[in-house]
Length: 283
Image 1 (cartoon, helix red, strand yellow):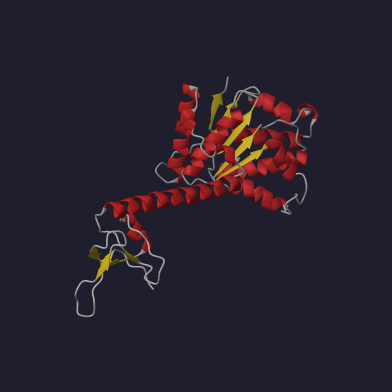
Image 2: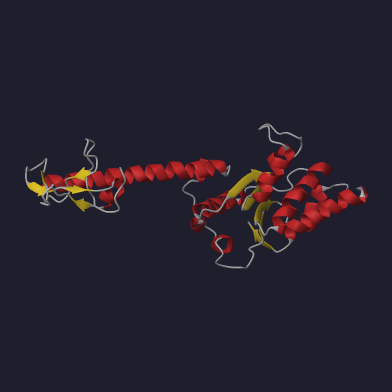
């Protein structure tokens, strides 16, 4: 049975309007029929009998009005539950903890950081939704341990997810582990791991340069960041380092004695990250 586009008045074979009896006051009321969503939009009560799309909704008795309000509130709560479950699934797919479900960047205490975060989120959304041709570039959030870098970028990630932006969050040590072997613990091949991080719309890498990667890992990181740069995909990173030289020394402590190729890849990786970058210093 096809669902009609609106609530309809029911008629008998002779074209006369059909009536029902209000179950609360026994008053004769018009018999209406329609799709479930359209009916609920008119604050009506559904009937789980054979006449699944028949409703008593135009009676003005107090009990009917109360029943309609209860049904409306019940439907609202059900919609909220479904929406929460759907968004919780999105957070899980983005690898963002569920405790950040209700996080909003607009509630950040520091006005300077809040404004920069909101402005960057707006740039990303406008670019992705083709409202702007201005590429947002990368965002680096710097600061010492305990200044709220991780919480800030996770709040930013949740804001982008609310705007239907595909976000992926990963800790630097975790991505190095995944890039270490030809197959990770999920059974993914190395090329699939690289593609997963290179192709998501927004990538958040937390605690960048927290440990020293191997030359092979640096090369794979460069593949990810270089592909993202070529495809104008913004990357958000947190780090305790504020300048390129410190990052380079952490990525390759023996930079001066490294082979020219390894040193060049490390330098190119920093170049990909720093190209057209906005920076927020957390204090």
